[in-house]
Amino acid sequence: MNNYLLNGLLARWLSRITLLAVFALPGFADRPNVVLVMSDDQGWGQTGYNGHPLLKTPHLDQMAASGIRFDRFYAGASNCSPTRATLLTGRSNDRTGVQTHGYPLRRQEKTIAQAMRDAGYATGHFGKWHLNGLRGPGAPIFKEDPLHPGVFGFDTWVSVSNFFDLHPVMSRNGKFEDFEGDSSEIAVAEALKFIGAQKDAPFFTVIWFGTPHSPFVSFLEDEKGFEHLPDDQRHQLAELVAMDRSIGALRSGLRDLGVAENTVLWFNGDNGGLNLGDTVGGLRGFKNQVYEGGLRVPGLVEWPAGIEAGQVTDFPAVTMDIFPTIGEIVGLDKSVYVQPLDGTSLVSVFDGYAGSRESPIPFKRLEGVALIDNQWKIVAPNVETGQFELYDLVQDPQETRDLTASQPKQAVRMRKLWDAFNHSREASVAGMDYPEKNVRPDPVGREDGVFWIELPEYQAYFEAWEDRPEYKTWVKRGRAEQK
Image (cartoon, rainbow, N blue to C red; front, side, top):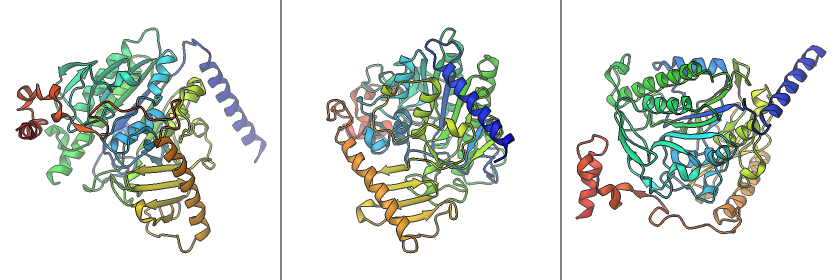
């Protein structure tokens, strides 16, 4: 390495260390703000910058060009609630009690929102929640709900229990409110109101879209260019057009408020794409599967004050990395985490590190398991069979060649890594990570998730909601079950 390059790298590292040290000072007014944005069922291939043949995403493309683009960014699980748990805790979803969609997050977990609130940040959640043990389409959340966003550290929330579409009814800290417009644009507008109201404190804002989850509902003007497609494909892509527009509104809103320069803006998907046209960019598998198409998602981070623009990295990263990364940036104490963590800080990657990841990335949702260690990945679509497959993701990102027989040493090494994680996971499932050394019971009826139409407090709204498109069939189903 020549002296010029060495000196340049050293200067960048010293600048980073100085920046982080300053931000970590108690009460420092210029601590970075944080906005975490997540789409719902958007596949890795459903962006312009990843070469989708029809969909244009100019605002996501601009965000990618303005920060760092992770071409191997992974959702923490192959569907939604588990991934949300991994993001909030930095831990694999099974450790947190969220085995699959609709399962509640354990109240013994420590979340990034709680840590940021306690560090002096104003905290807000906007959009889909899906960690309170409710299933069915997104419904407004009662203030009496024992697992609403406020329980986990969000002082302000305008939220629904699950996916939501045009003209939703949402809950503003427990008060139901009707909205008009596209769901993504509504979530961004409410988040910007919250951000604009923060005069004396930095903000930590989470925006979780309901797009492009089914049912697919869109404005006619957003369907231009997709008219020739089947209805579901046309509407889903149109939803993504609106979502991308909301990303543009968010980025311009942050600039208008004068806070964009020192705001960490992070965007990613919650799981792989649906089997609905070209969603996964040629990868194998879809949502609910542990092949790349079910786990790899768009991943972008923009922070003008701290990340050099125009970076593209193949470093394997995951939603579990978000909490420890933000923790390092803002100087959170190690006590804010429940151990063990499965994520790692990506601050060095932001600064150009292109080496290997030190810790593997584990995945488990029900019987589907996988583990990634840099270029290597083992997969067991059904772990109960004991059969694992081995892939080299650098040479074979489409996972077409199982190398178990030809690479026996790698297969054994990767299986040992999985077994070590699984042993630790089992202890977590039993509650050994908590001071009590056991699992505190979830609220009655929420243990494995419940359809909200079964709850008396929601049944009281059947008459008011019976003509709403998103609830109509569910109200009918709920009334039938009451008989």
